[in-house]
Length: 292
Picture (tube, rainbow, N blue to C red):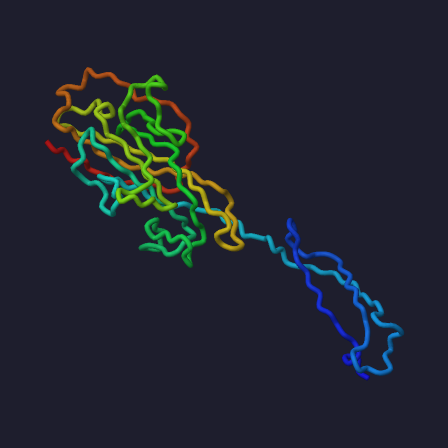
């Protein structure tokens, strides 16, 4: 009589409980032994005779993840309206007109790449095959305007909200800065985008003489939040990152500026802290042509 004819085996299963990540440990398996149906001269003295064996198990860590340090790439473009189409503002905007800005970000770990193997924010594809890092949201932290070449910085957006000039004891620069989260057709911006707009007011361009032109540098600091668990076994080294984007803007007079600005005295100095670090800088020169 062969053993396989008189022994019956039962399979045992193991499963993780909440809060554990592996199956390491020493285990005891208990079995009841008995002869199968039709077996004569059964060697066991009674049915369900007990038997056991002890074994040590070492398993993989089922909670293990690869920690990745994300590099952010992106750009900031200016537009003449809230369409945020592919044609940035290049001309036709005068002092006292509103300009629109759109920031897009992407991770240098994501595919597809653009020309030259560089990550292109316009090619960001949430849920795509080559998308390792997904974004949950982009917040606008600060917007700073600097009169070039050596002007003082003026913060018009701080701590995710417009600066109250009057409450801060400053001149009201009448920028009417706004957060833009939708396009003109009502569709939401993507999770890797954030937009804003403000008026290039006469109060900002107080040194702009009649028929003249001055240059501003616009700096936007953004905070990027990542989706967690979008790719199995990948973990982000940080939940949030911050980065800065710059853009030069030439502002032209609308024909109503003062003839002489040498006697004007107006300070744009505004002190504030900024812990944003530049991971990528997009520099675009935009000409706001004079139309009189």
